Length: 61
Image 1 (tube, rainbow, N blue to C red):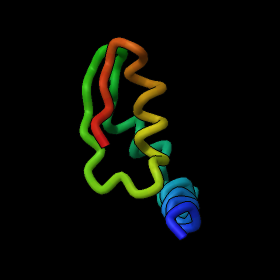
Image 2: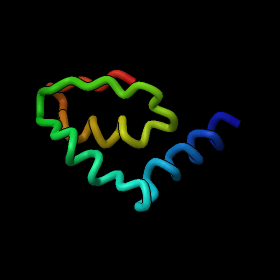
Image 3: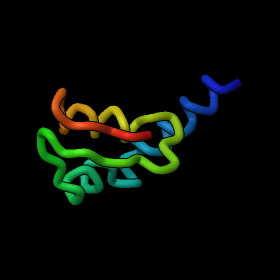
Image 4: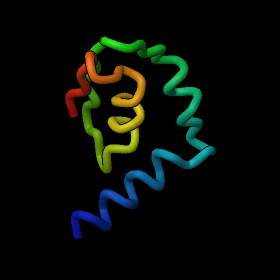
């Protein structure tokens, strides 16, 4: 059940109608920064944030 819910959250978060790329761009994360992903759902944005902040940054989800 949890896996299904995570997939549904990720499907909604990544839907182009919701403009996920514009959201990521507006946050303007840089390597080494930290961010808290409150209500991270299936983790779609958490994973994208992690790619941006790199190994020196932190994502709290």
